[in-house]
Length: 486
Image 1 (cartoon, rainbow, N blue to C red):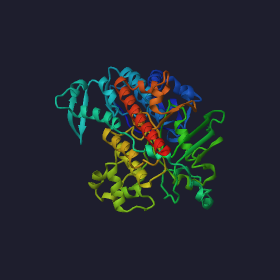
Image 2: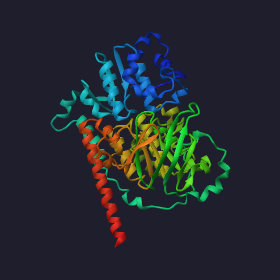
Image 3: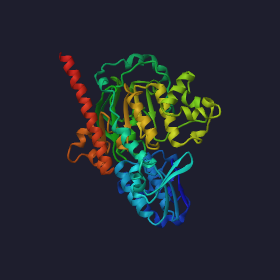
Image 4: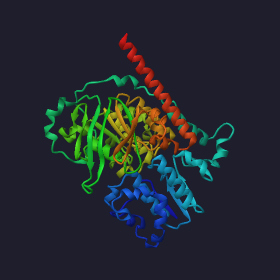
């Protein structure tokens, strides 16, 4: 039996060594496993293919690459039973569809596979759906039979919820687009004391901003190269403007530069050319504490520390109990934390090991809500959560982050269909940058192809969401323009 956990382990060594993982008997199956789990493009962009060296904890791989290497490791084992914990969650729609068909439905055909998943569009292709609620089996059967149960079923409700979560998320931030101006530079002269703080590990810790900003992001001629591959520009000649409060989805296949662009905003990766400015101030002129205290990130792999609920939410002890409980209520964790021994002072194990992946993600969302950032980075924040948690995150973007500039790396395209614009990256360059509805109306659109890869029914929902948001946005902008003229 093989168990593939979420957040799989990588060892320092080559990709091939990470697949072999001490079992030389699997070497003959590696080519087929890699072909099914890692599309050719992945190996093409790696400097030495299977011989590419992986750093500690897979630091030089994207979340999607880590997931596929782990999946290749699993299916290279010729077991009879496979336990797979949502291995598609970290993949974009096109790659996820191919991996699901080639690896899970292909190479593992004839094997017994238990697939834990929040990707509900996969359910029609499985033999049996088992629905769990608080540790008990409440429904089981074929997807078609459960959907057609008179009076509805939990499966039907979940599928409906996953569509309605985004279908009715009409944005409330249209009026924010007229915000202009900046006072981001007001404190730059006062922050010389933190110029030498160059630790990347403080990026996710809110420091209590003393400066009110608007959140306009301007990127000019940006180029980024990794020290390990100075001959290869991961980001190339990238220029764009993001308005205060704008919501931008960032998509692209593995290696397109999505995560590199996000890390550049925190100056974890420094630009080799060009500049990034927030509210007109070049971030290279700011101390790292100053810069990172103005930003928040909800990462794909949420990080929690050994401590308590309180210490993880309020590292600097800035908030009252009432504020902590209110934020927990907004993300749906208030009742859960209320049942724990110690409540806000309940123990959290290292890396949040005593919480589910979804609960850890919601804890990170709670931290971001408390910090009230003007720029929020989301790295596939809904990949590991169910439809209800997904709904809460989407509602938070509308309400708690209505005035916040949001850049969201997304594989679940439903989550960004109602965003203002979508940025499609390809080879570190901008392939497309426009409103989702506009891109979906263009023949040959890369974003359109990605949406279609999610399946006909889901693609129709995404297109409707994008069209509705576009109509609302431009109706409100037209109304504002008329009022200004009048």
